[in-house]
Amino acid sequence: MEWLERMNDALAYMENNLDSKISIEKAAQIACCSQYHFQRMFSYVIGVPLSEYLRRRRLTMAAFDLQGGDKVIDVALRYGYDSPTAFNRAFHTIHGISPSAAQKPNATLKAFGPVSFQISITGATEMEFRIQEKEAFRVVGIRMKIGDNPIENGENIMTFWENVSKNGLLRPILQLIDGNHTPANLLGLYVGDDGDGSGHYHICAATDKPTPDGMFAVNVPKHTWAIFSGSGKPTGIVDLLRRIYAEWQPAANYDFAANIDMEVYADMTPDDMKYEIWMPVVKKS
Image (cartoon, rainbow, N blue to C red; front, side, top):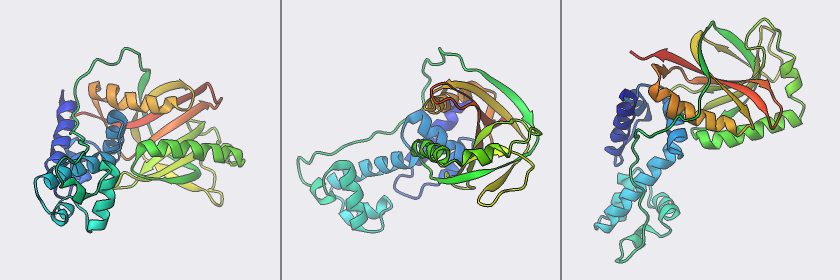
């Protein structure tokens, strides 16, 4: 499959450059998607954030080089550490011993092998989706900064929702819904930074109303959206995202576009939520 080949080509590029600077932007270009979606796809499919995966691979190779007789300072520089102190700290976190101890006979080390994307039998459970064109619209709400670790972001976002609800901040956002825009629901909007896997997550509503003090407005461009339906507990959103990246996208005639995606909440009942995940897409060339 074309998707499979592209993702494995991106992995090969990173694997061949563990001892030099790796451009995540270039890896994403090889995979034919944005850096934002490449990092999210990797984390949801593999189950490990991309930055952590690269760190483990580099420190695995560093252990092999040390056992081969290379000097600690040379190995540290080779794998991107500016000082022996930083290298020692990172190496100890992974292997449980210092780099100098790793050079001794009979040292016990850990090895993290390279991953690859393969075809597996999935999709026994149906996924509801539709493709929809939508004109540009504007959202207003409150936001939090997110990093480049989608798994960690998911935990922080759940806490963000809890705090916003507990502090009574959902009401002024709900009051922004004017009925002139769809979806006329409470929204969760991810906006990734250009050239980075980080960005902001907004709890917001589509509206033409003025932006209240302390809130932020985002203009969402016109897109074609792939829209996926889900229900149940909030933790189910993470599983649905994983299935979108691992099951739907490889078989679909669409690639993900733009550094953005959106959650639409029709029912916020804690144990039986009704929601949709909106992903901007373009047809594969």
